[in-house]
Image 1 (tube, rainbow, N blue to C red):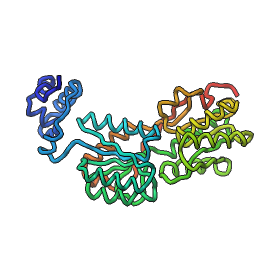
Image 2: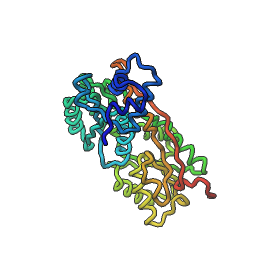
Image 3: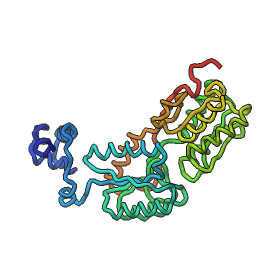
Image 4: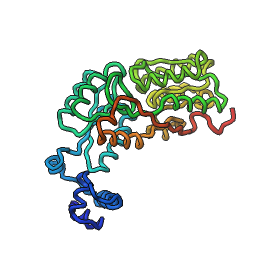
Amino acid sequence: MTARLVDVAQLAGVSRATASRVIAGTPRNVAPELVERVERAARELGYRTNQSARALRTGTTGTFGVVVPSLANPYFVQLIEALSRRVRADGGVLVVSDAANTPDIEAREIDTLVNGKVDGLIVVPVTTAESGAAIKAAAAIRPIVQFDRWSEGAGTVAVTMDNHAAISMLIDHLRGLGREKIALVAAEQSSSSGAERSAAFRDRLGEAGRAIVLPSITTDAGRKAGRRLIRMRADVDAVVCAADVLAIGLVTTLNRAGVAVPDDVAVTAFDDTAILEVLDPPLTSIRHPLDAMADRAIALLHGDAAAREERVERFAPELVVRASSGAGRER
C-alpha cells in the first residue's frame, strides 16, 4: 500500500500541515527535532512526493541531473549511486546522462537537462580545457556543481577529492613496504583528475619515477601496460595505476604471464570499485569519499548562487590496503 502524507504525519506525531511543510522543503517555524521526525518517518514508510504537485506549489520538481564522461567506467556508476542515494533521501529523482567521453556530446546533454527543468545539475567534466564553456552557459540558467573533476572557465564550484594527497598515500605505502622502483600507469591527461595524479607522481618521485602513458582509461589499455611492464620488469618493483580499470587489465596480464603480484611487482589501483575485492589478488586502492562529496554537492545546489562561486573544494582520500601491494609479507 502506497504511503500517504497523512501516514507520515501520524508516524511522526505531527500535524499534516507540519509534515507537508517539511516534505515540501519549506519547514519555516518547524522545530529541528520535528523536521527530523518527519524525515525519518518518510524514509521508514517509503513515502514519495507528488512531483507535479510540488512543481506547482514551489516551482521546483525535485529532479536533478548528472552528466558523467562514460557509463562504461564502473567508477562513474559508483559515483552516480552515491549521488542518487543523496537525492532519494530528499524524495527527489536523479536523471543520468552519458557524455561518451566527447565534449560535443557532453554540451548537448547539459543543454538538454538544463532546458528539461531540472532543479540543478551535476557535471563530471570530460576535459579540463573543453568542458568549461558549456558548463558556464548552463550555470546562467540553473544551479550547477562540478563533481570529481573541474574544467577551466566553468564559472562554478567543483567538489573533488585531493588527488595529490591520494598519490602521496600510495607512494608512502609502497615505500614503507620497501618498494623503490615505482612506475605510474596513466592515460593521456585531458581531465583535471588525471593531470593532478600525474603531476603529484612527478612531484614526489621526479626522475626516479617511471611512467607508462596510455591513450585511454580502459581494461584493454591496462593490458597493454601489463605487456610493456613485463619487458621493463627489472626496472620496476611497484606500480601505481591512476584508475581501477587500468589496474584490472594490468594485473590479469601479469598473472597470465607468470609475473607474481605482489611478490614480483606490487600493484595499487585508484577508485576502489567493488570488483577489486574479488580479483586475485585483491587490489589495494584509493577510496573516494563519495557520500560526503555527494552531500556537499547537493547542499551547494540547494544553496545561494554566491556559494557556488568558481573554486575547487577538495575532500580527503582513504587508502584501502589489500594483498596486491604486499602488505604483511616478507620480501
